[in-house]
Every structure is written in C-alpha cells, then in structure tokens.
Length: 372
Image 1: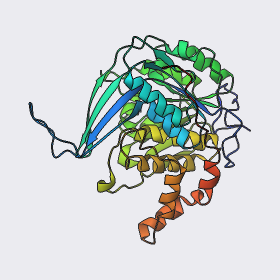
Image 2: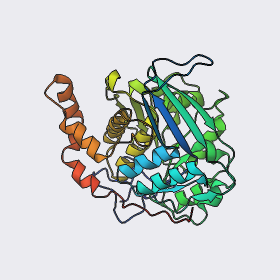
Image 3: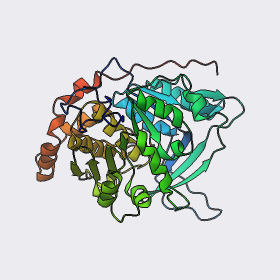
C-alpha cells in the first residue's frame, strides 16, 4: 500500500499508521514526490568573525557565502535526498531573484509553479554567524501573488510540506484540503510566534495533516506543556504522526494510530565542526519525509532525520549545506572502531548498502522556463 493511502479517518496514511505496511522501500520513481510553498530569500551569510562589531566599527569576515534561503532550504534538502520536488513561490525580476531561480533549477527542483514579479523585490536576509549563534537582518515586502494563485492547477503529489500558520491564515488551505482528499500526505511545520501568544486555533488545521513536525519551543507554546515529550503526547491527539525536535536532546515522535512512542538521540557534532546551523530543521523535515515515503518504520525515520540534520550544520548556508546521499554514505564509511562509532554503527545499520540505491531516484535538472 502506498504511504499516501487514505486511512479510515480520511487523512492520508504515513508508514507506521494503521493500514500501511512498514516494509522499507524506496520512493516510487514514477510518481511526483513533494511540493512546497513559502518565501524564498536571497541569503548572504558571513562567518569567521573575531567578534560582533560595535557601533561604527567595521569587522572583516573570514568566509562569505550566498544562496537561496527560506523555503529553498527545504526544497534543496528534499531534492538532494532524491525526492522529485516542486516549488511554488514568488521571486522578483531582480538580481537576487534571478540568482535564486537559477540555483534552484540547477538543483533539479521543478520551478514551473514559481512566479516572476517584475515590480517586486526578492526578500533578502543577511546572516552573521559568531560563537555558534546567528544574528539575522531581513528585508521583505508582502508578495504580490497569493499562495492559492501559485498553486492553481498544481497536481497533487505524494506529499506536500506546508506551514500550519499559513494554512490557518487561508494561504493554500483549499488546495491542501483537496490534496489531502486526493491522497496527498500533508506534512506541516510551523514558524516561531514572535508575539509569544501561540494561538491554539492553528491546531484546527491539523485535521487535514498526516504529520506535524514542530520544534520543542513551538510544540510547548501551542500545548502549554513544559517538555517536548509531553507536548508530543498532547499533539498526538490531533494528528496521526507527531514529531517534536528538541535540539541536542534529540526528537520525540508518537504514532497516534498504533500508540508507538519513539525517542531518538541527537547525533553528536564536534563544536569545531559546526559552521552554520541555518536550515538544520528543514533538513530534518526533508529526511523524515523521504523516509516516510520510503515506508520506513517510525524509529528509522527519526534516526535518519537526526543524522542528516547533524550533517547539515557542517556546511555554510542553509541550502548549500544540505547533505545528499554521498555525504551520508561518507559519514557511514568514516565510522571507526571507537566505542562511540561502534554505537553509531549499531544504531544506523539500516544505512548499510542504501546509498547507491537511494541516489538512483535523484531528479534530473529542470530548465528555467522564463526569459529573465
């Protein structure tokens, strides 16, 4: 049975839920895999600063990189894992928009649902990384085209990755409901609530979702619980699969159908190896989605997501630091004979021999279809 087969409740099933086989397999290479919506930012990242400059002071960074950011992090992460990925977003007809579009297309992402807006400025974020943390400055004006307009005519893929807050605001909600009814697994995340109110009304949108992947701050804010585990248990009453990520404490997942509860430890990363944590959560979501569509058991989905997100922080920028199967295989082959490495070998034994087959479903590059 497909990972997106409907359950008795009408919500598409993910592996580990009733009505779905947990036999591991690769995503069906003949089907569309995932579509994403949201804002793409032109990210300019600087790192290697001796200190944060005082007012009026100029500091030189050792390293600088630029890449598409925002939802592009998630799109690139999905594509590099072999999911055939479609993106529906607005971009300006400016230098930043042209750059982002060309990079996304080169990554094999289907950009046919993107809209070029001549009189609009592509959102920009400048990120300064120092002492393991980031300071970000963003410029963004409201997009001149709605999510519903971008998704008009879009086919229903095997999975759709959406923002719960956007659904609650009505952005793409009709399309998401129609996609779920057609068998698409709608997988939701949510952004940070700058007001601190954490409106519980957004949880009503989980009725069309197959899985919800918030972090601990978001989950605890929405449930008024004081731990990732208790928040996951509370949210399991509303959605078939809930995963709450908790930084260095790993992640908690609950399958509400079977009652299975899983905790996965974070994969350790040496502090000196951490370059940029931007987009690590997006990489987690992409890996969990890949493993879900592949039909893996819940524990393996969680382990893969923890591993791939740990590899992501070793690269610069959220999208260009996203690992693919080559990086996953290199990590696996690089494990030595220490007790810690042997523990990793036992935990991730399911990776043995997988990388070559997984890369076989990688998408071909998609040409840019506009005269820019």
